[in-house]
Image (spheres, rainbow, N blue to C red):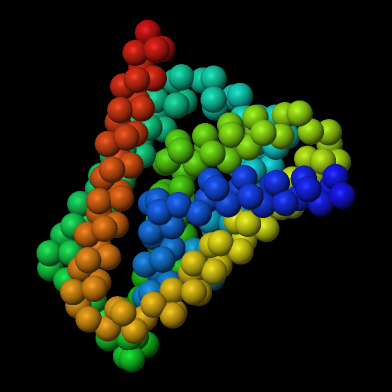
Length: 215
């Protein structure tokens, strides 16, 4: 029973950290709606979570959590990237360039796999919140567990990640009826732009705050 409770705890803690409207989830959702490289985008998110969760559970969270220089550099890089991505989303919202006819989606020039994977990695790698969630928070929660319990916790956390990203990517199919109108795509692009910029500004604040403490 102890192992099962630890497994469930890992599932729930991971769910609380992952299932939120953020830059990564917004990107996966958009790729799901466009039917563009859904497997590779979802798998890349899961694989990165796998690495970070394992690092967090087995004690490497302090390396990033206590290193102000790394935190500042990551925040600045993430701020610039997400600001640029948000700008493009707002531009798409104004021009309506994301819209495509779902029925003739096969004729749409899709983004290649390599570019989708690189964009997914950039959105994930350049967001310190991801490290704070998967490495620092999960690392702190599992600090009191023994090695066997940590394995069960990790399995529960990874199951959440796998279930969420693939459900979000492929589940977007059921939202397609709502996205047959150009205005819906424009609204989605606008929301994504807001998400990207809000995270960008929060990272800028985080970088300034970390710099002040570092001094």
